Amino acid sequence: VLHADCIKFVTMFRSLLPAQSVIALVPLLSRFLAAEEFVVHSYASIAIDRLFALMAGTDFKIPTSNVKEVYVPLITALFKCLSMEDSEENPYVMAAIRRLCERATGLLSPLAGPMIEQLTAVLARVVKGKREPKFCHDLFEVIAATVRDVCTATPTQVENF
Image (cartoon, rainbow, N blue to C red):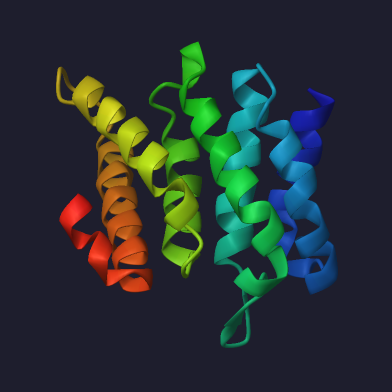
């Protein structure tokens, strides 16, 4: 409960935090993604989604260049959340993945193969029944953003998709 409350505090007051503090929070939040409690990793996903959407004037408060070293582990941790029993179709986790993929510029190439495999497995599971529309929408956005990022960085990869 204490972890969830701390994460919710960060999410609520994110616009009041200085940029350096927001950047420092990213690796801390990624540790909470491994929590088995649904509420904790869901709140961590919400916080990540909202922190990466945060603007400072006309620029993002968290420039991608400042968090390059944690980008791949962060996306990997979010995908691990989707493999947890109670979070197989967690819309908050998928929204955070979508946000990170939208902001990635040339960072997804090392993850593209495993990401597409996992996204295809999730898609196969989702088409079998009624699912939450937001989760499905974000799923397709992630697939599109991944293909766009990889093919923009290396145009020869178009054939692999």
